[in-house]
Image 1: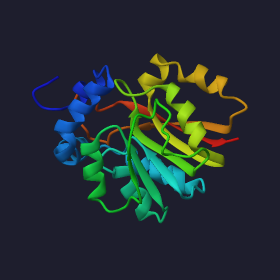
Image 2: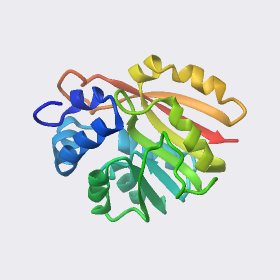
Image 3: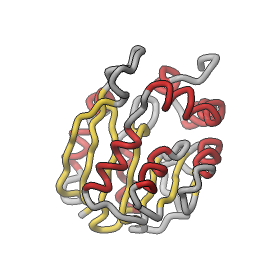
Length: 209
C-alpha cells in the first residue's frame, strides 16, 4: 500500500481487508484529496441519471463511501437514501453529510441478513464497480434486495467492464432485468491531470423485472 492513499492503491486492492485498511486511512481526506482534487464527477452523473429516469426512494447507495452520491440525490429531492459500504470510517464521513436515513456496513458480495428481500425501489453506485473493488457478482445481492420494478443506476469503470466481462454477466441476467442501457462518460472533469485523467465509465441503467 502506498504511503498515502491514492487511486493507484485503490485499483490494486486484492481483498476486503485491503479495502478496509486503505479506506480507513483515506476516509477523512477522501473528498479533498481525491474527489475535489481530481474533479471526480461520477457521483453527480449517477444521481442525475437516476433522477432523470424517474428514480425514487427508498434508494440504497452501494459503496456509498463518504456520501457524494447521496448528497447529489438529496439535492435533487430523491429520498429516503440508505448508505451501504464495507468501510465503517467512510460511513462515518457519509453520516456527517446528513442525507442518509440508515447506514449499513457490509460486503455487497455477501447476503446481508439485515436487509429484507425486495426492500429498495432504487439502487445506485458510483466508483465501486472498478478495479480492486467489485465485479458483476455483486448483482446477485443487488437483485435480491431490489424491488420488482426498481431502477438500478451504477457506474462501471470501462476498463473493468471489459476485464471482468460485465457484458456476459448482463447477458446472463436476461429475464431478471430489462431495458438495459450503457452510456459512456468521463470519470473526471475536463482539464483533469494525471495518469487516469481520461478514464471512462459506463453508466449502466436497468429495471429489475
